Amino acid sequence: KAGVTQTPRYLIKTRGQQVTLSCSPISGHRSVSWYQQTPGQGLQFLFEYFSETQRNKGNFPGRFSGRQFSNSRSEMNVSTLELGDSALYLCASSFTRDSTEAFFGQGTRLTVV
Amino acid sequence: QQQVKQSPQSLIVQKGGISIINCAYENTAFDYFPWYQQFPGKGPALLIAIRPDVSEKKEGRFTISFNKSAKQFSLHIMDSQPGDSATYFCAASEIYGSSNTGKLIFGQGTTLQVKP
Image 1 (tube, rainbow over the protein chains, first blue to last red):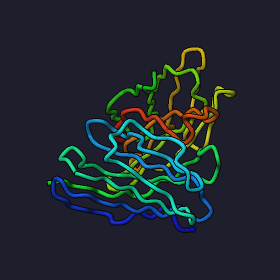
Image 2 (spheres, chains in turn purple, cyan; image 1 turned 90 degrees about the vertical axis):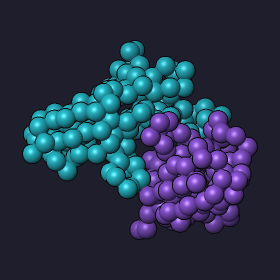
Image 3 (cartoon, rainbow over the protein chains, first blue to last red; image 1 turned 30 degrees about the vertical axis):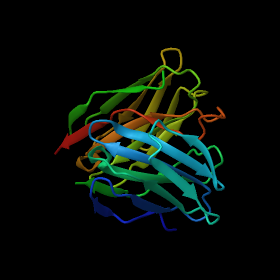
């Protein structure tokens, strides 16, 4: 059974640009969550989707957005990139409606220069 | 109130020893407490999780102890091995809270080094 797949694995962008990250959950999982991981702030929740609906959103500016498609694949978008957006972006999927037993992908390493 | 405080920040244990990592929380609405293990270059992997209706859960060499009254929970790694060297994160979630579904609040992480 394939795990959570995130693409691309690495990305370098310039300040002011925008970026789209992709996440393919484990087959059959309908809940997808996104997290930002940095050395200073640790793992912080961005948002969570279930059956194409955003159920929860973390404390991030509106530049961070996401969506989920009917096949449960999810994308997150960051517009007007800032240096502080450099981080490992992790996607997690869960089979259960309460989103327990979340399985993480390897992440996308975003570097903003 | 949403914070989860984890200690120690780093831990060095001899092979065969017991590794203990502690976490404390404030929000009494939290009702799901998982532990994750992360190796460099990898995403976090779910190790073990507990709900507040039990005080202890054991899976192999990993045990979670949960103290609801003290709002604390800990991970014990018995017979620690060099392969256990990784960063460990505790987390908490409010499963049945309609506004917090799917949101894991993570501790700051503990870097464990097991010496051969």
